[in-house]
Structure formats: structure tokens, C-alpha cells
Length: 259
Length: 376
Image (cartoon, rainbow over all chains, first blue to last red; front, side):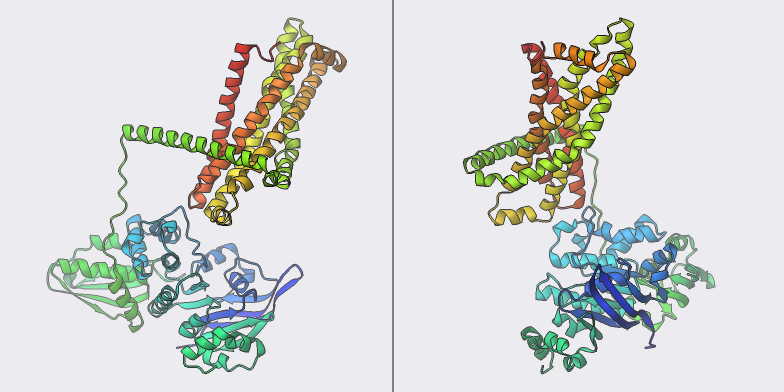
């Protein structure tokens, strides 16, 4: 596949008041890959994601998404860009006053000129694609289990067939079976919908199973970048700590890597 | 984006459908209506030429799927030509997951009798719930009084500050203005009879007996009652209330009692303050419009207004405070599941507490006139 950068981060600096979160981060994410941003809790991975999707301003540096520099983006271009990506939030962030079908239909209703009937039918397709049972469509988010909630959030995220899909902690709060089901779903959707997927996670199992490349944040910088097997060999102390803790080793062995 | 919208053309006497343009969710608006208008052939083979389609996504595949299914019903065999290989997986996915028809939720409008019954039951249920809540709080209060450690003085003090002290400016200003308005209205009538001096009676009775307690209660219901409902409602929705229960901390004791006690202390004090600024407003108008200078005004005020009038007004305040705190907190506890419901409960809390305040005030007036309480 032709290499085409979809996200380019250059010399990014993030700070809250006097606290420096990121200090000179540069990353490039290619079209069609499953890229993960990993690291210990509090290393600023969710912050990085929020900066990429324009939920938070940058302190310094540049981020280009799909060729647009998001720092100097007018309101109309920003709106157009936002339609080309979608984000699945950690807790789902489903609108609690709407049913699942209405949640999925919302972006369709806002951004397309389709008739209401078409929107309903398309929403049901997306719900089916996300692996939800048909009777979930008319339920409210509070009536769904954690796993189904995530699937509903995924259905809403793919409503407009985005080019980029951001997943914030997709496996958090799921039992292992539900988590692996969600992984497989994401991978199959990636193949069929030609998605580029950016995952923020600290779930090592998920990292081994689905990612093409991983960036590990630590100490305010990118301390490791590459495929999982390559990172497992990394000499950097923070990366070693991350991989060779008791849980990291167990997962590594499981995936055929002698940590 | 410069890609033209989806286009279709039926050629070769209805046996070849040439598709082009953007077959994505942004390009297929109105496409199905156009498809229905085409003069389709019956029987034979239909070739769908997809080679000129520049973009395709789930929505486009879904439309294609519809065409295929519909032509098959009309006895045509369908073949798709020129589908790019990269879309094959998408096509397979949509075909494998195409949903069974799901009936939308049936919404049948209920008859008037059903609506009436529903509302009656709802009100009955609410009233019962409220009484239950009052009872629970009484028990919690008695228990707290027995062991004062449970009274949480810091919470009470901070609530007094938020609901009482912080409300002083707005209560003072509004009641000053109301006092002025009353005096203005009265001035015209009194001057006609040369009864200027009775402005003190008018302002004193109206403000001390009715307007100050009522105004304060309504302001506090809007300011603090709504905040109580929103706070407790949000805590309910985010399971914080349940967390308190599992910790063995009574939510009533922690969240309701301090507010209730604080309001019962703050509201009478606010009412006294409102009495003061209200009379001040009336006095100002009296001296500018009616030539009743402050000395004369206060002299007459002293004669006309009994202490019992003042106490009657201030005495209503704790009752209003109880209504505001209990209705606000109860509405919060009624929140269920969603952000929506927190908003609804907040609105309900304000509307119901003002409603009940006015009813209580009316009861006070009736009882007072029957027993000549605080009148003379």
C-alpha cells in the first residue's frame, strides 16, 4: 500500500500552567494502519488524543490531520474535517436521552441530506455492523451492558463511514471475552471500511493483538516507537518497565515473545 | 469536496444500469427516489455497471443491495460489473450483516381518559413519595439531634453561606425595588385623599407580612432549590448516592439535613434583611413623592406596625425553607439515568416549590384572618 501520512505531529508541546505534559513530541501515522498510543497512566496519552481531535488547544508545535494544519483552521474547514473522523469515547458518551438508533442516526441527520426513512435504515445497518442485536436499537444507553454500550458507541462512530477512527480506551471496563470480541470487530471493520485507527490504551493484550505500530509515551516524550515485537526488545528503561512488569511478561509470553 | 453526487442511468431497454459519482453517505441523498422513477425492464438480466463510481461506502453498498433485492423480486438476474476489488470486503460485510426489518417502537396516542388517569396516578404517586421523603427526613433529623455528631455543622455553615449570605445582594436589591414599587402605587391613591402619612402603614404591612417572605422564598427557590435538585440529581445519575449508601453513610444525613437546617436558619434572616431594605425603598419614595420625611415615616411606622406583624412574616420563612429544601432534594432523588432527567427534575423542583410556597402562603393568610393573628 502506498504510504500516505494522515496525521503528522511536529514538535508538540503541551502544558497546563506550569506542568509540562508533552515536551517535543513528533509522530507520523500512515493511512490504513492501526496505530496505538500507549504508556502508563498520567503520561498524557489521552491529552494527545484530545489535541489531535481539536478538543484542546496546543501550547506549541503543529498537528496536521488529513493534510490540514489544525492549529490554523477556520471554522468551516474545521467542521468539514470533523466529518471525516470519528471518536469513540471511553465511557461511550452516548446521549442518554436518545435510543441507540437515534444516537447512531444523529450524525446522519446532522450531516447528510438523506430522507428520514433512509437514515433509520442506515442506522440499523450500522448497528448490525457493530455487532449489536437488533432489539438493542430501540433501547436507551442505560439499559445496555458495558460491552453493548461500547458497540453502540462504535456504531455511532462509523455512522458516516469516517476515514479516521479514534478509540479512547476501547477495552477499559470490559471483561476479557467482550474485549476480544470488540478487538475482532474493530479489525474486521478496518478491513472493510478502509479505516485508519488510532487507539489510546494501556491494555497490553490489545496492543499485541491488533496494532501495526505503537508509540509509547513516558517522561513527556515518545520513548518507544515501532511494532510490538520490536518494542519488546527495546533497551529504553521506561519501555522495559512497561513490557517487563509481571503482567507485561505474561502477555508477551502468550503472544510468542520471550520477554 | 469536488466529487459529483451519485448518478444513475438506465440503458439498453432497462438491462444496463450505469452508475457514477459519489456513492457515499454524502452523495446518495435522493438517489433511491430517483431509482424508483426509472423505467425498469421485467425479466432478463440486469447489468449494474459500477466502473464509474468514484467513491463507495456502507451507505452506497446498502443502496446497491436494495437494487439487487428489488430487481430479483421482479424476476431479473442481477450482475454487478466493474466493482473495484477494494470494495469487495465492504460488500460482503454489508450483505452478511444486512439487518432484518426492525419495527420502530409503536407509539399510539393514548385516549383522554388514559391521560387523565395517568396524571392522577402520577400526582398521587408523587405526593406519596414526597410524604415518604418527609417522614424519612424527620427520622433522620431526630436521630441526628440525639447524637449531634451526625449534624455536620461545617456543612450547615457552608450551606448557610451559599444560600443565605451570598444571596444578600440580590435579595436586598429586589426587595428594595419592590418596596419602592408598592410605595409608588400607593402614593397616587393616598395623595388623592390627603392621606399621605398612611404610606407607612401600606409599605409596612405589605412588605413585612407578605412581600418580603414571599420574595425571599421565590428567590431562594430559584437560586438554591434548583441547585440542590441538580446536585443530588447528578450524584444519583453517576451512582454517587449508591456509593454513599454502600459506605454506610446516609445520603439524607449528608446531603439533605444540612441543607434543610441551613435554609431554616438562613431564610428568616434573609426575610429580616428584605423587610429592612423593602421599608427603606418605601421610605425613599415616601419622602420624594409624598413629602413624608423619614422621621415622620418612622414615627408613623412605629405606631402602625405591631411586632406581631413582623413576627408573622418572619415566622412563615422556616415553613417556606422546609418546602424549598425538601422539594429540591426530593426532585434530585427522583432523577433517573440520564442528563435529560436531571434537567427535568431541576425544573420541576423550582416550579413545585414556588407552587407550594404560594399555597402555604394562602393557608397562612386564611388562618391568620380567621384567628386575627398578627393583624392588629
